[in-house]
Length: 263
Image (cartoon, rainbow, N blue to C red):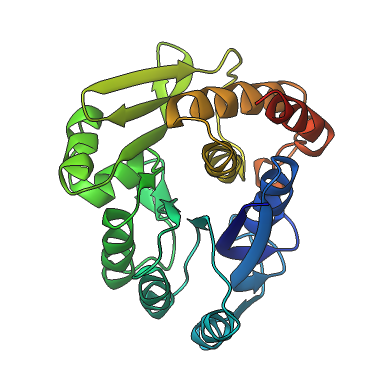
């Protein structure tokens, strides 16, 4: 089986990050190997939470992985709470041949998340520019490139060496979709269900599905199409009272597994 390192936080409540990535990667037939950046009582969208930062442990864990000769086919990164965490990941991925997918968690709805300093955002930008696939939302694309125009922002990332740019959460004419940009090709995938608002963990769902499908042999375009259809189905069939709780993806995991078997 192929192996994927998942570098993200672990939240007790709010279905997101490693709580989403591990089951998604696993059901797609890929070994999931988590590296927590932090452990939280609940994800940061809630009004109150406790957090244990694991910055000092990450280099130690990476050293142990290297000492034991572990290698990966894919590396998926998400939430960071300190620029030193990004430095540890950059050192870990420097000589790796793994497919690197960076989900540049920094903000949404035109605003940075609380605690994301200029220094941390610059480090995340450095990581994103070293990745094969980057999955920013519209706000994060602007933070990465300084560009409000989605196509121009994507072209900046592609011109700096990123192979595939997936811009998520694009709202257009009462629809929401995800755009995939590669050199000489762009394609948009719209959800068939959109009721406004956003939900915790949908970005993690998309990034994890794309990573798992690409490692299973799909191209990024078909992987994003699968992710868009899955997330649309899950949102449509979730009874969410608080958007921070996340969506009920668990009962539809079998569909991803069945789709993957056909490949």
